[in-house]
Amino acid sequence: MALERKYDAIVVGGGHNGLVAASYLARAGKKVVLLEAEDELGGATTSVRPFPEFDARLSRYSYLVSLLPDQIVAELGINFKTLERSIASYTPYSKKSDGSDGGLLISQNWDERTAQNFQELTGSSAEGLAWQGFYGEIAELAKRIAPSMLQPLKTEKALREEIALPQTWKYLMERPIGEVIRERFSDDLVRGVVLTDGLIGTFVSADDLQANRCFLYHLIGNGTGQWRVPQGGMGALVTELKRVAIASGVEILLNSRVAEIDNDAEGVFVKTVSGETFTARDLLFAGAPQTLAQIRGEIKPQSLEGSQMKINMLLSRLPRLKSGIDPKLAFAGTFHVNESYAQLESAYRSAKSGVMPKVLPLEMYCHTLTDPTILSPELNAKSYQTLTLFGLHTPAALFDKSPDEIKSAAKRAAIESLNQYLLDPIESVLAVCQDGSLAIEAKSPLDLENDIGLPRGNIFHRDLDFPFIDTSGTDLTWGSETNDKHIYLAGAGARRGGGVSGIAGHNAAMAVLAND
Ligand SMILES: Cc1cc2nc3c(=O)[nH]c(=O)nc-3n(C[C@H](O)[C@H](O)[C@H](O)COP(=O)(O)OP(=O)(O)OC[C@H]3O[C@@H](n4cnc5c(N)ncnc54)[C@H](O)[C@@H]3O)c2cc1C
Image 1: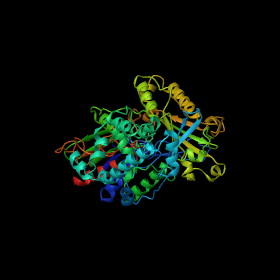
Image 2 (image 1 turned 180 degrees about the vertical axis):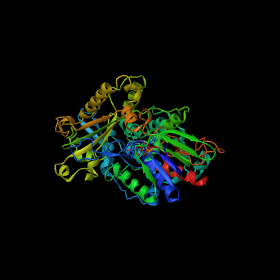
Image 3 (image 1 turned 90 degrees about the vertical axis):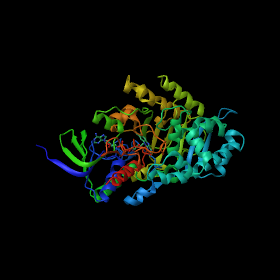
Image 4 (image 1 turned 30 degrees about the vertical axis):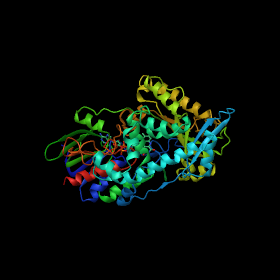
């Protein structure tokens, strides 16, 4: 008969949030076991060599960091750095005057070149000024709201009063962000660049308040909202979190998929697929809430489905652009394609009606321009580069009928979209594997469900919430609590989870300690 093992806390799921939660508890003196279903840790934060013959370690799923608070890094002693990108974004476009290619290049910090780029696109300085005003207001809100993410939840009224920026609060939390963008900006391309932050990982129209939630999470991270490149790739974060967890005394068991969770007034009982059993006072579930509901035989929480394509590429060199801009500048930040406001809304309407958008909105990132360490010295010497593509408005439902065929078609559409701006078609600069195949891999929302258990490919596990509660008198104090006294949500699907932040893990651990 299998031996039942006893702990103070069982953490289910070894993504970055599970590792954070386990480490905090172990450092508080708890006896902790972490059960991970797969044979490796990391979940959506892994680095891999997708093309094994090339020593290029790509962040296979998540790729940029903004939401991880310095406080967690410092408290856990994580030796992990993120690097600033010199360029915020580049958006190629066809000039209205003669149809030739231009581009909107926006530096990380406002400068003369950025001002000129806005002037060139719109013919006046007004849009550039609107941009500075809008993001200046949001930067102030980010600074004030970020610390609250690691505190017990406040009511909307309490947080609004604490932030004390009533105008900014109103347009970010109460009015549809699409309406606000249309009011504050007049150029379709500029509007689209702003809107993308409301749509990454969220399949809605610009006028749905869900886009506001997504927008907020993309702009308040760590008090700056800046998206930075993880040095050494996302896998470097996992390696460090694993080191810290083990040093803190966490017992980590891989290949331990939890299949049963029961509880009574005293605590919890867990059984894995292979029949191992564990008991503890508390259980922190760091997979998706939908998975927890399935294991418990409960109704799954409703959520939007995932709607993105992720394409990873290894290039033998960067492609030249038709606009003539140096590709090292164009690809240093976020490279937007087909992401004008009108194109985003049109793609949404098409996908919503069940048809894959003909003009696929997407954005791309070349991490090696900021962090060459993810390539071997040999590949660096040969000027190889990586490229990550994130395609929007490709919801899981569009792939159901014929997953592989539709994924191939979407991949082709993404490549065609990109190629319209390139002098060298992307296929001509992709590294070639020994078997003659090109170094490119694509992941649909269905792949994300199959490979790493994201429900219908939702990158945040479930819909994001505003970081406050609507009414007082609720039992939710950290956003981690469930109906069962000894079971907590510690993954991205907890309130204020979502993204690579560790916030859900931290808050679940605090909730457990508060109930000691
Ligand atoms: C393509 C893609 C791109 C993204 N890009 C970014 C980005 O650039 N920046 C950003 O901040 N966020 C990004 N995200 C979102 C972010 O990666 C996730 O929200 C976050 O990593 C979730 O972390 P987590 O630890 O909560 O859960 P996960 O990483 O999902 O980990 C959950 C873990 O639980 C395990 N598990 C599940 N069920 C069980 C079970 N029954 N028993 C045992 N173990 C179980 C899983 O195997 C997994 O290891 C992206 C996500 C995707 C998919």
